[in-house]
Length: 530
Image (tube, rainbow, N blue to C red):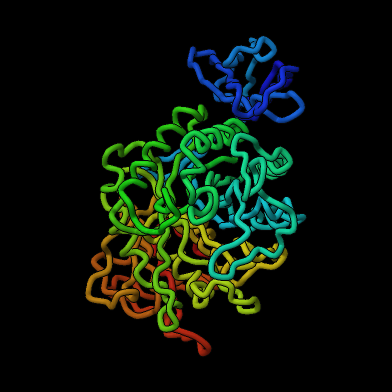
């Protein structure tokens, strides 16, 4: 049992033992704890079975003062019935990540600090840890580079079509009882979950976030077989995940299903039934998970717009983890064109928050091409896609072939990592993201993919313009002194040398070995002059 003194916004844990034998202790008894705060608020937290006749309750209090709890079970088991008190002491804590639509790019910590999300998709991170991968060194390096969010799945896929075999997966990563051919969905693999626990404690130590994807790709078993993975087993699965992990500060998002339109049969296209499932499951998570973490949906198809899809219950889903890859063909893959236009169309009228969570996975040409769709997702695609997402006023999450799933090369970074670091530096140290919004500053006609994108503060004391392929921009507003060119590859600032003009031209430098260079123009009274 945890101490009678618990620090604010930390994970407290209680455990209770019972000698009663259950055929399935995960399914045959419901155990939960009701917590009452000093202000009288009552929160119900599911307990979870952890083997050896032990049930545990994890809870993360958000009020200082004296609390009490009541443990109860159904059917009643006197050994799993208890009550007690504890005191929560104050400490500096930023708290959970919260969705703040139309403010600070959609996210702040409970303490009020705005959050620029910079993420990395490592879908099978838990599986890599289970198979001996050095995820600690990888995560510590990413955190030092400024990443603060990781997309990962609680269930692990060892294959992605057409040829994405995860050859590193030498240990079985099935999280249920039985096997893929003879599943016991009323049992859970406790060795697997002990491994997930270790990973989550590392995230907690590093003070970074996880998008906890509760169900992986919908084309894989059991998620593609709803006659087997019935609503009852789905609820038991999700409840167990909430019981074990909802108390962690590191849970930034609960995402029910990766590319949720795979529901119900693993067939990838938009279906109204999938929208209804998304709303129902989102509401159920909010009713079951007491800590109020963000509930998000990750899309496959980009249309209809999400405001239309979720109009029956527009507040059920807090955030869209938006996926759109832009151009990825031989001719235009470098340009990642179409991203900002699709973001605008798909999120039109959406009342919640959003993240630009996927625009491809940077190709490592030294590796076998297991997924042909990655072939032209090079460093240029990474960088331009990232800037297009950021200039749409969204946090960004990318992924790299070295680490996203089929490959496990955790000690080497691909070139695009450095470009994402420069984006973070620009919006943290030069042009504070939380004050900037998409703005209509550039006039004139430009081909799709070549039009400069612009951001500005409400007061118009700072403007920024992204030139995805150089060129000239006619301006609707006057340049503010000082003004600079920011190099998105090196992070260098160069004095513009132009004042009070109606158009600006990106530097004429060209990349002799590749496509036209992209540049960022920024001007404002508060920009550092060095």
